[in-house]
Length: 130
Image (cartoon, rainbow, N blue to C red; front, side, top):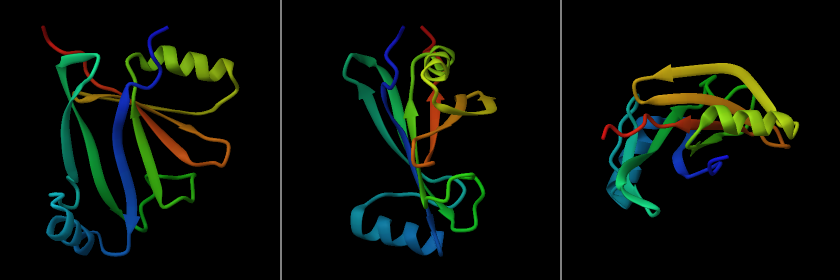
């Protein structure tokens, strides 16, 4: 099986006033982002420097349902090489897996929960065009 997690795909958290938070992070930490789009950190994989990828950074309204059923104010997205293989292994290990899947031009997504019920997003980026 391929490696399970190959990188950090995204960090998402809730805020009372996302625009105010984007303004603060931009002014004080230089992280550029805006509601509905977020921000992006571009990087290359250590084991494959030709593979350019990103880590998304987004602030959601505190009322978002996107993290449900988790009640945590955050969600982390991990990049994986082979989403189907990872999900198959996790299922065999008894991990809680949301049956929902999403496929987009920017990759495939699935969700799992850790033992404390925190929602985790798994993302298989599209394969590089060579």
